[in-house]
Image (cartoon, rainbow, N blue to C red; front, side, top):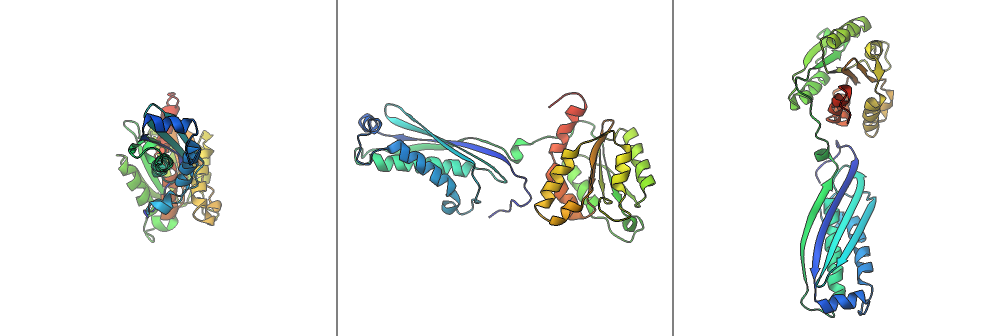
Length: 300
């Protein structure tokens, strides 16, 4: 199966539909419950739910998903039964296959239960009607003339004893959104970090991402410097990052990272490890760009 390890769970919803064409007489008897196998639509509804829940057992590359809702509806017309199934789940991957499989199972069940009285039925038009959630729903992009900066805080990296990897990861992620950030490496000195943060804020930088100095060590002072310059904290940003990280390593709980606004600049502290930085980026991008219309008075 394709890995979805780095994805963030979101509300996923998919609706699929299909049709069973049958004779008017067969459908009349179905509605009158005058069939050898009796309650056709009730059984078809159960079949839809069962099929949605068991889709990974039928379709090899589908992930097992904790489904939250499977709703099957039927519309009986003169010579056709219209089927519609909506599936919902909070998970990392979409539920469209579950919805399509559910419609297919419902259609097959109707066919099976009507075939004693109609030998000329036809199943058709099974298709995905809509899907919501996941990466395709969150397409926030940086506004025009967006300015960003990456600050690496590390005594070893500043002294040339250690190669920077986390700053490179951050810079490459910003480049994916067409942003070429300013890039600085500083020692773990609170005064120097504070001074550069204030300069970048005064220069109108929209987003400052720091990496390093977020832990419990005596030289981890980036968070303290950030706290000196922000006007307001935005705790949800790092709460999202820590929750994402905690699902992957118990050590995420030791992060003291904060995020906040200074004027119209957002500052976010990222861990010093390249893996921790990457996980934080996965948690907050591209949603972080959604903040800028709000900062500029435009609301959601």
